[in-house]
Amino acid sequence: MLVAKQYRCTHSATCVCTKGHLSEDAIFLVFQHLNWNPKLIAKISCVCIWFDEIAKRVLWKEFCRTRAPKMMLDLQSSGSHNVDGNWKALGKLLIYCSGCSKGGLSDSIDIPGHFVYRTRFSRTSGKSFLLPQCRSDVLYVSDPCEHLDQGEEGDVGFFRGVFKSFSISRVRKMLIDRDAKLHATEVCPYCKAKLWSMLQAKMIPQSACHRLGAYDDGIEYYVCLNGHMLGICTLLPLSDSEEASELE
Image (cartoon, rainbow, N blue to C red; front, side, top):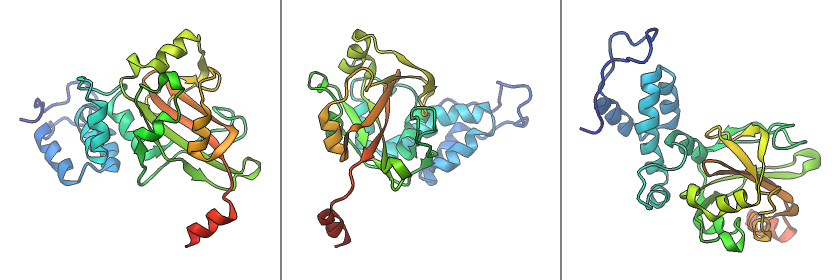
């Protein structure tokens, strides 16, 4: 048996599932056949509380393990059976660029969030976003999602990431030691936790700009209480030689 079976929704008297559900084993096998399709997982989560809970507990976990197996294995290698936050949040982080609303985390940029087909996350790149004294931490960071020709803002890139074992990380300890303030209004788009500004805490190293190909003063990123990271940067324009090599 894959997970404990439960056939009736006992969470809500108004649930439309009055005749019971399929077994969780059957749901597991159906979504395994569908290769853990995230759009279908999101849809079944909307049916009722029971389906939402099995999606959070089982389906999103299997989606994450299938989409990024080595990354998931590393995130869980500390002995914990759960990543920080929850599987649904991590699944969304893998496939969703959060964008930015004007007046939220940015005063001038207004780009809606959107799903991305595929994103590469790198543990090696993550080191570039950490101060030297924090580089024993493990941080996976995505390549920037590029939004070109944004008027006066130029070319804008959004990136996202996740820490391993954030609760015992050096970054978290330093944020607390520096009495970093949580953002007054904005929350993590993946798990709804409060956000620390790494720029305000003066914890953005020069190497992050070089890794992203961004202006030195054109980068900012935030880390939530569960260790999810989201950031925005102004990308340097491509040189003529770079453009030529891309055309080739």
